[in-house]
Length: 358
Image 1 (cartoon, rainbow, N blue to C red):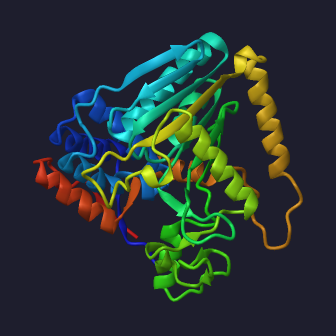
Image 2: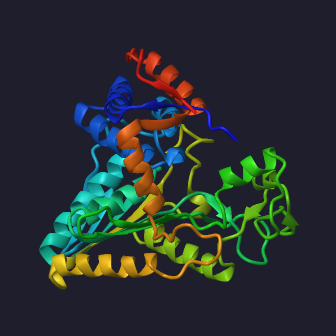
């Protein structure tokens, strides 16, 4: 199937996204910070969490669920542990500012945890974990989300997809990055498969009675998705909920407001950001060399028949980033149309910002 979309340079996409944010009341610095998160996410090929989300975020601004003038604040700080109030700011701003504080505390204490409540959807968690890796730290970012995964053996959704992101630096190259939600496969991918007439495998979806289903539309009618690895993935989702929402006192499961369905209400999400300063454990340069050696060993394992290349987490996104730097950032047609309409709404110039792609 041929992909339909356009290519846009990072600079033009940054200018457009930040211009839109300023048009909706964000100051210059916040607009730049948030736009960079979105543009870098698109450049890595994670278009589901890039500028395509701007129209929904700005709908939250219009309706009151996000405050463009919010002043994110520290509630308490005890040594290397910090609690922050996102104050219903745009999630990318809360995520970046929480991660910056985690890095500062880790530089002082060796490791740190920053918990955030009253957060909004912060996009791709990989961005925040990678911020730590850029500072020779191991970064961990977890956010909770509205329920979609069921308790094994139960009826209906009970817990969020609760994405987990972990990044570790390497010597002379991009970091190793694990960035994943906890259902077997993304809900959007299941919907696309269904629309294309492809069969949904057993165990991916359950209907409102807790019975196996082949129809992902059941997820909108009281059904649930299965966590990857069955009980193991479900267990990870439970612990991710405890770390990201219960620890800071954020909303938990049904207390959360879906940011797309209820743009007028604060989302009440929570985040868990952890940074580990490698230099406080051992020489960071030696650590990164050892990571490279470890990765080389994985790359050089004997390949099974039909396998062209062995990969480590984040490598596909790193390849896409390099391609984006050379050819421009690919944006799907539907996302580009929504972006252009949003830009026009606030008077941002969008003529000649793209070249047609396939």
